[in-house]
Image 1 (cartoon, rainbow, N blue to C red):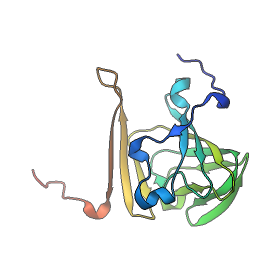
Image 2 (cartoon, rainbow, N blue to C red; image 1 turned 180 degrees about the vertical axis):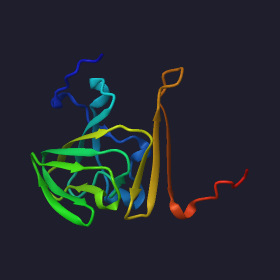
Image 3 (cartoon, rainbow, N blue to C red; image 1 turned 30 degrees about the vertical axis):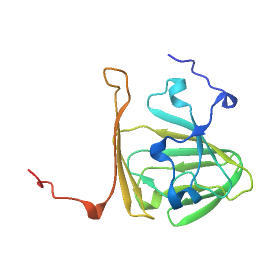
Length: 172
């Protein structure tokens, strides 16, 4: 087992993986650096990360999780969180609960302050997960699988829109 303690000062913050890096017009609204803590701790059922969002940006699009619950602890900075149809101001030491559910639990943290917004994110890691993106009408199906024989991480990710669905028997 890994050492079960990580000091926040030791967490390396890096740009998101390319699959989650904002591009085009989205890059004007979304940006974040993240430090993954869970793997360093040997966590299995919970995911932990530090997320740092520059002024004027959001870390992720407005979304809800159908399976997993998230919690955020604001470490520094200020901003707002949109949950469902409401917007709430957030500041250092605020704790935010985002349970699994429908559009009423959709959430998005935005840095509205002048300084970086830094928060600890903790979530359950149930798989597969379905996320909905109410602003864009998208959904994502995300699954994590045990590593393959070579030790490489395995997973599945599909992002689409419901109107792009095909018949179950199509092509059979």
